[in-house]
Image 1 (cartoon, rainbow, N blue to C red):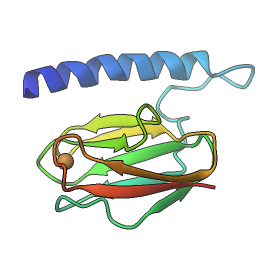
Image 2 (image 1 turned 45 degrees about the vertical axis):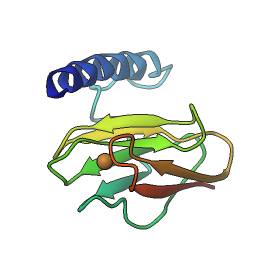
Image 3 (image 1 turned 180 degrees about the horizontal axis):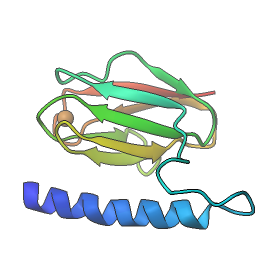
Image 4 (image 1 turned 180 degrees about the vertical axis):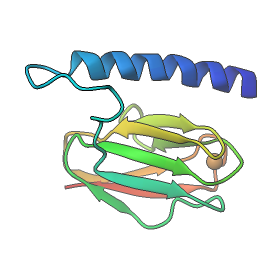
Length: 119
Ligand SMILES: [Cu+2]
């Protein structure tokens, strides 16, 4: 499971970096990673996502996992967003473009629930 998880993260990072390069558009070209601004951070600690997080439409949302276990941030509505985050790791995902409340959960721990609000 950890082996597969690490591979998945590696693939995901490649995709994310590729997307970042492709999205640079006509603006100045800067080093990938330093230009990715996140609107908010969902911090996972002690098997909890904490308070609801509000972000603008389509924003990049950072996830900080302070637990030793792997968690995910997966929208209850299928396909809206999902990201796996290794124990003591970080991840990002793109918030939906439609304003509203998006409940989410952890695919590994059914007891974990949180809320993303797109304004
Ligand atoms: Cu979890």
